[in-house]
Image (cartoon, rainbow, N blue to C red; front, side):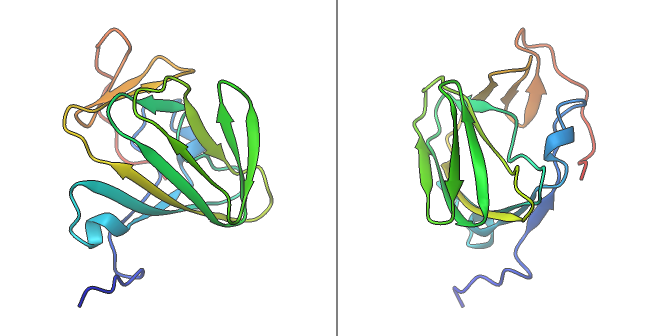
Length: 155
């Protein structure tokens, strides 16, 4: 069967970000739809952000494109340029190599549900715009390449 069961699909809560960068992302919950389907060329997540939660720290990718679609609720898209409210039915895309970092923040009083789609490129590096952090090969590093200590998932 090809239908994905949302109740049994792999999921993650919280984040592996090192402290103190983990705080705003601890309540996020992602159902990994792409993993459930065995996809390896791109990822698809169904992300639930409770009130106050962020999708991530503000970041941009060197090699990966990203796309988000708000299924339910509303979030604030934060970029270098400005802040925009995205409501159910709104979407946004982020081109690989565009250094305008982005994240979604739920500032409402209701949960928001977002469909996230992104490519899975070998050698990818994510850069975090507002903090001394980058992600490379599953590790979190300072901008100078010094690794942060590995942490348990928090959330």
